[in-house]
Length: 46
Image (cartoon, rainbow, N blue to C red; front, top):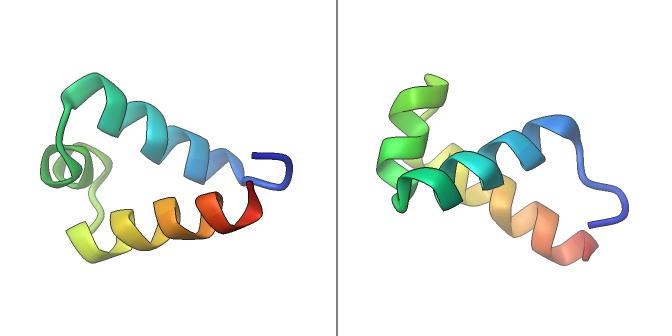
C-alpha cells in the first residue's frame, strides 16, 4: 500500500483486529460504506 493514507491504514488495522467492517466502522465513528470505500481505495493503490 505505497500511497495509502494513515486513515486507510487505521481502517485496515481496525478491521483486522475486530474481524468486522461494521465493528471497525463503529469504533472509528465512520459508516460501514465509508470503511468499505477506504479499503477499496487502498487495494487499488496496492
